[in-house]
Image 1 (cartoon, chains in turn yellow, purple):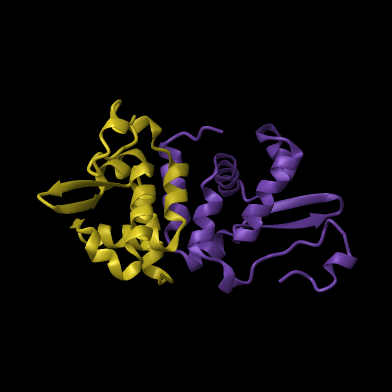
Image 2: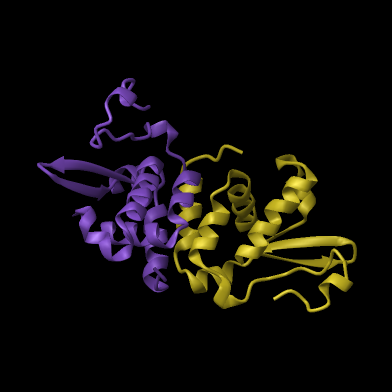
Length: 117
Length: 117
């Protein structure tokens, strides 16, 4: 649920996350069905935490912001600020708990079949 | 590739299938990101071959035809006619060969998290 006063607080640091019961396997599969997002998740699975700048080779800042939003709203990633730096991570424990085998299967398939990003 | 004379041959039995190199993990994930289609694939994985009528509890004939088309064009299913009966099956060997672990992971997650169809 968005913060009630979100419109009064346009801080870019206010981020919306789905409740656990709103995270679905369909939303996750849809979020992963894009080359850029699947590669983002693959990299986040390899290296626990990353800064958005680490992904700049994959697209424009605007484009990446959109993809991070889709991943976040599907329940796949979270972010926090450390001073001025944003840190992003994969919600591996949550997804593995809700949908056991899903990320393992997708990542195994990805590692066997190079992505075209 | 559609049959060259497809427009001259409106036979409902002419079906298009993607070439192997056109089957992508993104297309498969997108096809699976729908409750009805994921449930269809789950059932086809349980029982090798089925008749489209077996799925009629899941939606209208028109609706199911659309979903079968999406699954077929993603590379996930094939169909053949036996007399007047259409038989559908999951291309499990092909998908397991191209994207090892993918279907296993998705189906494992599905079995742990009841679908809402």
